[in-house]
Amino acid sequence: MSVLVIAEHDNTSIKDATLSTIAAATQIGGDITILVAGENCTEAASKASQINGVSKVLKADDSSLSHGLAENLAPLIAEAVKANGFTSVLAPGSTFGKNILPRVSALLDVQQLTDIIAVESADTFKRPIYGGQAIATVKSSDTIKVLTVRATAFDKVAAEGGSAPIEDLSGASDSGLSSFVGQELSQSERPELTSAGIVVSGGRGVGSSDDFKIIEGLADKLGAALGASRAAVDSGYISNDHQVGQTGKVVAPELYIAVGISGAIQHLAGMKDSKVIVAINKDEEAPIFQVADYGLVADLFDAVPELTGKL
Amino acid sequence: MSMKILVPVKRVIDYNVKVRVKSDNSGVETANVKMSMNPFDEIAVEEAVRLKEAGKASEIIAVSIGPSQCQETLRTAMAIGADSGILIETDDMIEPLTVAKLLKAVVDEQSPDLVIMGKQAIDDDSNQTGQMLAALLGWGQATFAGKVELEDGSAKVTRELDGGLETISVKTPCIITTDLRLNEPRYASLPNIMKAKKKPLETKSPADYGVDIASRIEVLKVEEPPKREGGVKVADVDELVDKLKNEAKVI
Image 1 (spheres, rainbow over the protein chains, first blue to last red):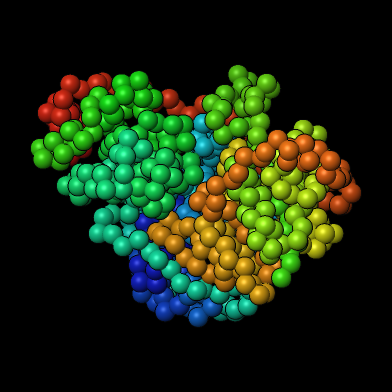
Image 2: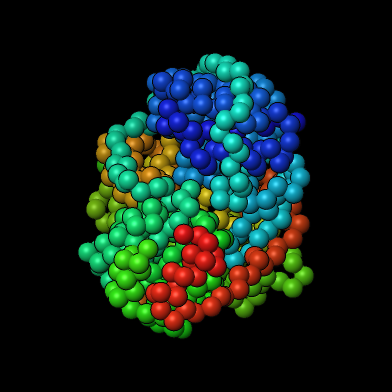
């Protein structure tokens, strides 16, 4: 058995979700190869080679791979899988992995499994369905297993301690089907939502984008990432990349503070695996209190500034 | 520029239903449960209709795969503004790769210039079919679309990524998968619901397209997620700070 893990990286560093994906690969067993595909990605490849438990790094460095376009990346991965006889292909269950991997899976004629949260054996996995309202145990009969991994369900492997050889992977080319135009990445000093130790989220109860500053103040005091419910995003209080829930990001920090969030099923799907949940809401009947370890029934406009002041 | 658009739509348990796991752990309860069009697919239909209203598309075909009740889902799509429907009728569980193969056959037959579809269905949460269809057709893909602008021979699509927004240009024909904020689907008016009943709806079977629908994935069991117990209510901010510092030890 041998596993290929597709690294998510920014050409200089490896994203944390990749380390969780490698943890899942370790549970499957066999040699683990990491693919670092990008442009001028030598530094990222070198960091990948230091990850604990990695046997080999494949580096594909080409201008056609600079923005992770699926049309260029997927055939390269599919060919590498065939040429090296990998029996499993894993990628983080991020927007990066979810864009690329199904395209690889179809090229290999494999039925992919999305967002696995547990490895039962080399062919049997657990994954959430219906926004986490049920957990399915599924067995794949495909010769090659193609899997995206929910990063929050696996503890990251150590980023250091390894010294795997780096090999160049050639064959990249521009499909001509798509091109990168531009990006607007969220500029934030705050930690990334999906890997933060503490997340502070605001909901519809916050009432306006101006008032969201109260939530931001608490987040900054705690060094926390900033989250939001879908209702807050739909109301235009904050941008969609902060959304936590079935249709947004799934987080599982040490501490999750939900402020002015009622606790719709769709939101709970994105945060209920947090270690400690705090809810602050003036409606004592709000469903969020049913999952909160500590509930405070209070007006958030009084309680949150007071909390920020006392921390 | 006058495009033909194909919009695949899936019938799923309604977004607002609390899903119950069957007592024998074979799946989730679907008997007597409200079913609706997958919300992401509704956004796809709406986007296609807006393109038609803007004079950029001339024809919208909705396609669904599943039991005969999917006719209702197709009628809903036609009430929003699709011109016709195709139902590939089957009572079997169809996996995303098989759906993509069936849709490829429909594309080969109908030759659309654009396929707009939901990024994922809210039942199996797979988020695969659009990307797979793009691979099988050798077309470009623009997934998780938050904004779509059609240009001559290409589509400029702003995609919603974990870390922000990205804009790409994809040659047409291509696949676009919708994210939540692409648009807000309209409610179908009563006259349009009546009109939809008269629009053409064709029924086919997977065998008509020569696609093998055998499953690759066996569902061994379906369980409730571990239940989270509610904790305590604290009286005030001071007690909360004390609990977080001294009991939970998380700050």
